[in-house]
Image (cartoon, rainbow, N blue to C red; front, top):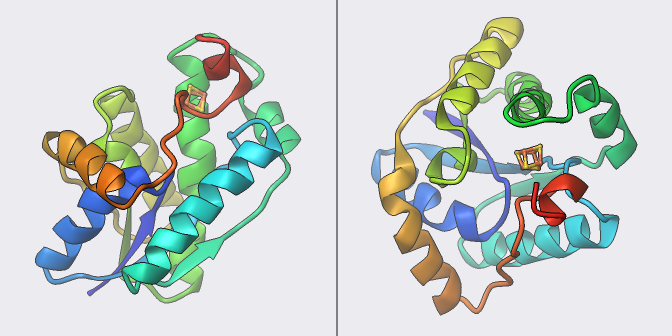
Length: 173
Ligand code: SF4
């Protein structure tokens, strides 16, 4: 079965990739994160992810969309958790659309590995994206692998960012 794994960054992809491969999935990676600000940071995270993906034989695609488009999609309510729910939806709708277009059987996201994200909000967004695109999503609570992610990322000497991604999280919101 072909699984498209939406990746928020390299470090958070380490454990999920091994987990899904161990389950027998043939995994492809998608980096679509227009939430990340500023653009140099988005590029830095992509390069970290792409370099690691190549070393681990993970075919990886980056879709670039200007940050302003993401900002427009989330701006009707910039408070949390509303902003994060729209952020998940924006990214996962594109992941589902891409998965369908590229002939994958299903999709998922590395966001599910983080204990700092709104886990329920991510599941809701995956459900909406799945219904809209007509492609199933795969859910696993990967938070138990979060510390393993950190260990693996350190082992690979990967860049590990200090904030979630958007300008609001950069400022501590
Ligand atoms: S804090 Fe993270 S999940 Fe929430 S809107 Fe910002 S980038 Fe998206």
